[in-house]
Length: 102
Image (tube, rainbow, N blue to C red; front, side):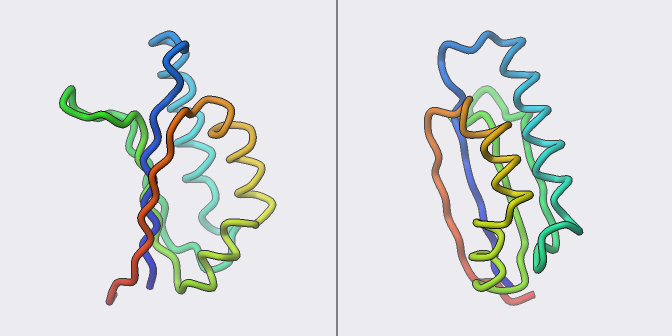
């Protein structure tokens, strides 16, 4: 099993209201990929960080294998969500992928 974790910071020019709307869209879009992308077992998106946080959104995915992760990265449903709901609004992205024993 592979864990895929992403942290994003949203663009500074977005208002608080825009950020809340964008975070909700990211959550719905990415969590909705379960059952659509082969090998994607779980998706959790956190948007309610504490004041001590320096990221706005966290994605935590569980995939069957590294091959499933590679397929997820290019899957049309994932790319559509990333292109419409994530990339236009984020200024930074940090990723950590690692194997786990499930």
